[in-house]
Structure formats: C-alpha cells, structure tokens
Length: 420
Image 1 (spheres, rainbow, N blue to C red):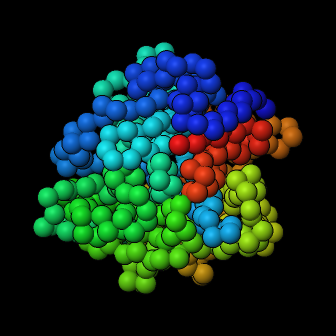
Image 2: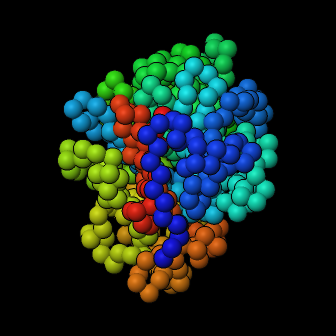
C-alpha cells in the first residue's frame, strides 16, 4: 500500500537541509513538499514569540489526546534518543523547520494532528498557511534539536484533579505556557542543565490560568544533549521536577510525588519493552528499528493478551466513558475513562473484552487482504472511530552529531534525515 512516496533526504549540512532537496522556495508561507504529508517551512526568523505567549494566556488552550514513548541510550558516552509519536491518525501535515529567533538555531518537528480545517496536507499545499497556522506550528512542535546538540522531546500526561499547573514561579517576569517550553528552551539553552535551570527558576510555567473552565493536560520532557547529560523534566501540581539519568518516558509520571496519586496513566509496559535490548542499539537506524517494539496494535488484534509484545490492556488509553457501576457506557462520565479501569486489575479483562467486541467488525473494515491497515480509509474515517491510536512516525536523534532521522512505520524505506 502506497501511503507515502519513497524519498530519502539526507541533509549533512544546514544549507542542504533548508534547500528542500534543491528547491530553495521553502518558507513559512510556501512550504516545500518533502514527501507525502511532510512539508518543509525553511528557516523561521520572524516568529512573534510574544504574540504566541499572549495568545495562550488569553485562551483556554486544550491540546488533543496523544501518546508517545521515548528512550535514551549512550554509545561511547554519547546520547542516542528514540521516540515514537503515538497519536490519532489524521490527514494533517508534518512540518519541519528551523526556528532562528534567539541565541541558538533549533530544528523543529511538528505533526499537527489538530486544526484539521487549516493544517490538512491538501489544504496547506493549495492555500499555504494563514497567520494563525504560522503562529501555532512552532508552538505545537513536539521535538526540538538545536545547534549545540540539546534535544527536547514531549510526552503528554492525562487530565488529573489536583495536577493543574497555574503557576510554578510567580516571581518570574516570563509566563510560559507548558507546551511551548521545548521551543522556548531550545532556542536559548545549550545543554540539559541550562534548560532545567530555565524551567525551575527562569520562567513561570502554567498550563491553565483557570482550571475550572477547561481540562488540564500536562506534558513532560525527555532532555538529552551533546555533553552526555540526559533526564526527565516533569511539571505538575505547580512544581517542576527533574530526574537526572531517567532515560526516557511514556505517558505516566515518574516523579514519586506526582506518581502516587495519578489515576489516568499508561505506558509502563511500553517503556519496559523499550529498555529490553537497548544496550545493543548503536546507530540511528538501529534505534528506529528498536522503536518498532512498541508500535501500537489495536486490541482487536489479540485474542490472547499474553501474546502481545507488552500489556495491551494498559495501552488502550482513550476515553471510553465508564458509568458509576464501572460499565463502559456512552452515557458514562468521560472523566472516568477506561484508562483508569484498565489499570485496575479486577476490571482489565472486562474492559478489554468490551472494547474488543465493539471494534472488531469496525476495524476489520479498514484492513487490506494481507492484514495490513488501509490508511487512506482510516484517514477518511478519522473522528468516527473511537480510540484509534497509531505510531505515525518514529524519530532517532544523535545529539553529538546534531542529527535527527524520521521513519514512517508503514514502510521503513520512507525516511528523512536532518542535520543542524
């Protein structure tokens, strides 16, 4: 199945990277097509950071659900990072760009699965980007690698009562929306500890100025640099925590104070699998292949949960509502979702069976004869299929080489390599 046209782009210098393989017309207004669903915005020099920060402060900005996995290993003391972007499948574009607005240039990667009316692949190719899109893309980028070798990766954390972040450092002159931290830090910090210092003392981080008016989803960040430093930065309960040498994350809190009361979490089995055999990973290509261990497979694929590569029950992390009796029901409370019930041993099998039964016939409709997913059909059905998550792409980063490689899991020959 030909979802993407095969194209290998190797960019060994920033100049080649920004040229769009010979096409130098890449710009924020007129992106260059690198491959299906992947667009190059070129160098962004005129980004209005203050405007974006004011926009966040004035609105209740609620990111959609998404899941991710990240893992760090060292090869001769140098950091090699892998990440999966496990999110709801859409027809929206993936944008690559260089953000050059502060002290350091930073390569950003943004898979914009929100704002379907503005950022769908076909719409952007036909109409370009409006002012809102140009403001939002650097903000929603989940991966930044700067010219000093600092890499920042983003994972989400679910809405939790009491985990709101309204202010971590009210004495600071800079109010920073949590999700904008990667771009803000990557353009100002040369290593992990400068980024951590910025988060802890340099800015006032918030995720929602009034949690009573909208849900609050938190984010955590895997940090790694060219100096061999790495760790996990978590923000919750108006506090910032940094766990040095924590080699990655999934969608659950690791900081003990945050983890002890959290109900809606997933990814422990996923992260465990990623650490198995990690010491054998030595190259970007090996890391990309390693990340395939946790590619999402929908629960209807497994008749026997013990045959799954990890505990699939804890990875069905969408929001099937559960009623007061613990039954999956469309009339249930969406804040009491299957994530919590799947993490509860006595309810796991029940919820898994219900989800599997409800979706088996539906998902069979989107399979090819050879058993692979029919992605054009899935894309058209986006928004109508509950809980469909898939690893859209995997990323491998060599911090010392300032190099990032992206592989689309549907076909390992479809890869893009960037350097900065």
